[in-house]
Length: 513
Image 1 (tube, helix red, strand yellow):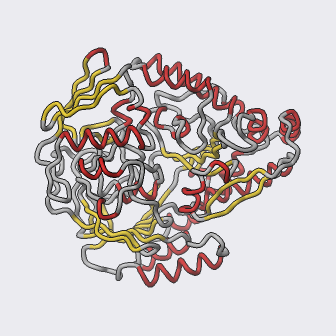
Image 2: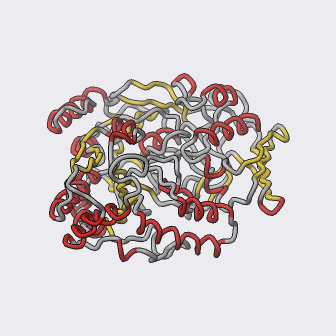
Image 3: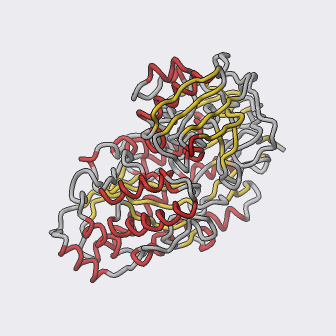
């Protein structure tokens, strides 16, 4: 999609693309999903983009996977043990697991993947920065030694999203910091990569030699059974086109539907609504590396002080049962929930914001806000905040691009001051993207460095919770990121589909009625 095209032109193009390029309605054995847009490269180890993870987790697998309570369970791993006070981790692999190339998975593949992930992966340094060695100590045994315990190690390797996806040894070793090539999209998952036609579709097909686990499916854990011959992921940026495509039978599933359609679609018998059990939350990242926002905590607090998050959530998500204005980064009832710092979450005080901005030395310079319309909620939130900030005398220049362009631009600190994304529920604070100093935003102040180290190196839950309380307070002081609020997103699917996963669009164990 070309960034310079108007929204109307892009929507029209999407409609034409969808109608012409979707797999034929009723194609036997093919599930068709309408995604929010073209994915970046499917090297899931290097990216946290949801659109890549949605496709990639059908192809690539991890050593562990989260169950429905977000507890990590063995997937490619068979068992593990921890020694030396938590500094030695020994993982035994399942035997007989095949890659899509028909090569058997061994410890050498895991070691090569772990080494690459530690050097270049989106979340790899959170574990591997303290690794003193990682070795294949048997054909199916991997031994990881750390300089200090890591209480989150299993959670850190339990998802493909920026995580430790396991690639064949030769592919992992030669890839380096560049995305792996399409010909090397070789994993152990229930589906294997077949074809990618840019701006048309990505297609995967059932891997007949897949070896599922014996446990009952639970969340992302347990048995993964491919019940479709193929899955075709079609980029459809316009939300209306995604919905009408499912209603007409052109697609079987469509993701990320806007809140203003929720009430009507809930009553529409041509679709089934799939409301998420776990919230996502919008995030506005401040640029801590370059530009007007760098180290200017008072200006960041001025921006947050001007905002009414409830209004943005209402516009973006519609009915109240789809959102909750809560400043905690973890839901109430979870072990990590805390209210520290949340007084600064949504003050909506224009006068105070003006005062803080003046004290920060702000003189009206345009603040570049990078946002995409592929996620309509992102755009809606940004538009509301831009108006509210104008009332406080803070000049925001919205830079509207497609999602693929945003993913490229956010890695270039000279291009933006704030960018908009969202985050899924995390089972551990170390998995929050803003906790990663290498993630765009690049928050790495002396204060967070010390607290991050303390959080990672402890395996005592009470002590780690106390550290997280301090970190959330620091987030509201230094404002590396602004949380918009909790949103319960929903997708729509054909009424014919059964076995859909409430944790998100994954299509193993899914079939037609």
